[in-house]
Image 1: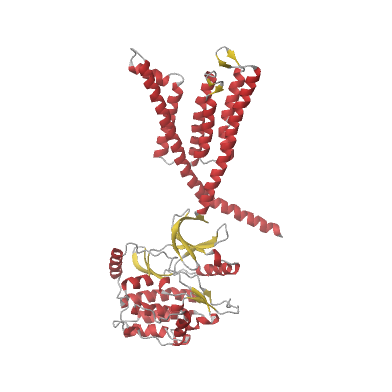
Image 2: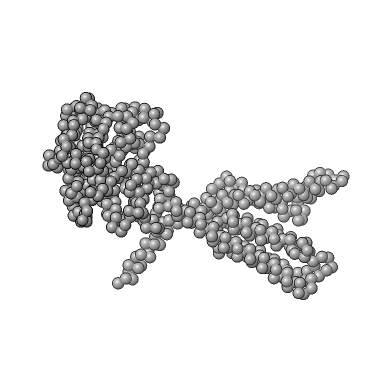
Length: 543
């Protein structure tokens, strides 16, 4: 019975690897091109300097010879012709890698070509001038070792590939030594048999040892690159930077690896990510992803990191939340308040119709942003504390746990079983009061006192703080602040209809929104608040 599940798991893992591989290959391709360009450019400069020195030395030592003839013979006579060939080859490859983005197969071929182009001149010199040595030690062997190690450090490669590309060096040296037999250390001075065998072994130990070190270095370097790359990825999302943090987690700006779409990715804090919490968050994210209203932030995906940390990805928004706007600009114009509250009601109406209660409506969780060329697009953020109204309460501990924000919490929120759509309308009315008056409906020095005020105190009408508040809009907000859920609007749709029936409805035009945002941007160098940041100050208070 377990075998089908095992096959399914293996298939899922294989699919995950295949999905992640193209993005990683593209990143590696770009890095490989940069490193090959660096290697080719360095080789071109070094060989060009060598040729220049050779030409200068020959010109200095030539007497009565035509300059062009000296230069020609210096560049194209053996063995200098080998260096000349390297100059043209490496320079041409550098130019190609600089001007064009090459595919992975072509870059792999260039890697092979460049390394063998370094080996071949050394082997040719060793075959033609095998008597040239330092105290009987072939001078080309250290250069071959240097080239093998340099490539392993600079060029990303697997260990088997490094081994396959480098093996031509020791095999070439061995073949040449065996072909010439007991060659001459100096003219007419052949090696004795024992010395010849020692030289065979010595050269192979150095070259094969260099290859072993290079293969190990390639494996370590590639592993480190993969770990670095994986650390910058969450599933299909490439992390670009941290953009916010709150009580529940951290938020990062990311891009989808294939779609290249800016995304806000939120990670749940490890210290609160117990097994039960993870299950609840997964359930809540799945519920929220069912929402499609344009005034609700869209959730694209969710998953776990390699360390088991829960994350979810949502649309990235640019704008400011209501708390920031009121703190910077004071109470809103009445028509704009109607615009904000009516669109928020529309988003909540869809959520409530699908059995989802937000439970944390507050100024910081409602954002005004620019989207599709339109200004003041309302977005309800962070359904991270949502509740499925159709499911039984999960609070069964001996202690009473309040989930939400005390400043905007409905009186019935002390009893988790009583939290429902009317609770969201109470919280939205608190937000409306804040937008009209420029201050919270209740203020207290302690959480307990604040909760008591929401349960029993009568709010001061917002018109006493702001004389411009019209009576019809004030009546809607005060009705939403009723202590008993049954005394509030019957639904988000009913509240929205009442708002749109106000005398000031429709008075906030796109031109007004555009003018306000232009003024806002001039006085605020960075007017952005990312969707998932939302200044999370939600409290989980034990009382």
